[in-house]
Image (cartoon, rainbow, N blue to C red; front, side, top):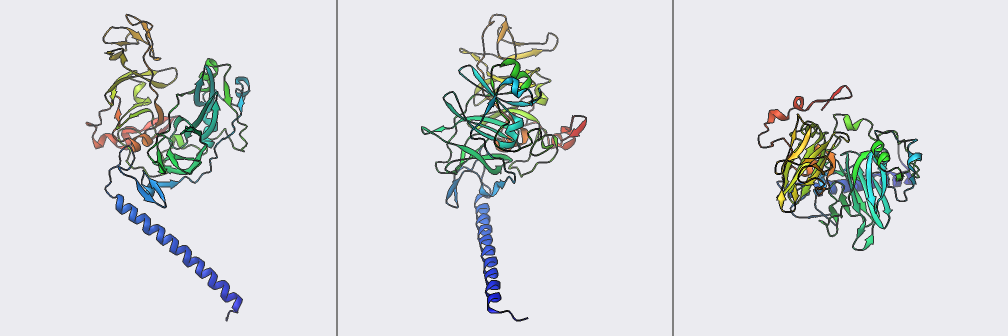
Length: 398
């Protein structure tokens, strides 16, 4: 059937549109292939390129081809409201975990129940402008100052991931790694956000400690089912959504760890290991540290092992159920306080760590030392699925 002039124009317009889209995609694919070729064999250091690459007018400190669309809209909270402990107790179960931050003796609690759906909260606590972050895919938490070069900067979830770790975006569209706080896309890349101290604990523990504290309200301005996880059973499922730079070794991909990275050195304390050992003496970037397992809170607390000019080493006696230092025999609790002996009343200096799934931490820091696991002696057979199968809620998980 012969087309009239109008139909011909429409058909031609559609054809030109399709050709244009195909051309743009071809250019994109060609440029991405060129980047992959250029970066082929490049050795990543702490998940970062040794030198920045230019792509689409921006500088990248991570391979652009390894950035993926997260596919889920998780809007940041920019004007947080807060409830009292009694108000929040009506909708938070005691076993719900969250982030505690302190300012001049006052405390605030940001539950994972809400953070899982937003991942970024812009807040001002006292006079401190802060970014409270939590990555649902990595189960990693971090708190940073949002004061950059003397200006308060607002952040949001970029909707993109690298090694399954969400990228957070500043007002100028620069991208930062949530886990490390390093600027990896934009101008002046390599800049680090300043960390702010925080602690992860359950709601039951927090409300008992801080009955006069404030709690991030579920009145966020968004309609979300805060009783559900946005990725449903992701935390205990075998699935990993996005590719990782480094294939997970030595431990189960979704084991919970406390990680610490200094310069090009890193250590990890895994919950599944520490709960049977209680004490781990480690060194990171030539700094002696110790991890103490807290059985009540089900997590490891990390401290500097130095008291004045003396470096202490620690051990746990299964018979007496006590942690003591080998130099003075003083007994210590998991809060890093000597409770008896020559050093009674002395406190170790706490060190801020970051909780994360092992897979996300290892993808960024493959050189990580693991408490009680000698990675130099672990054979390939030790990392097979059956060696890392554990039981969660009566179901075997990997």
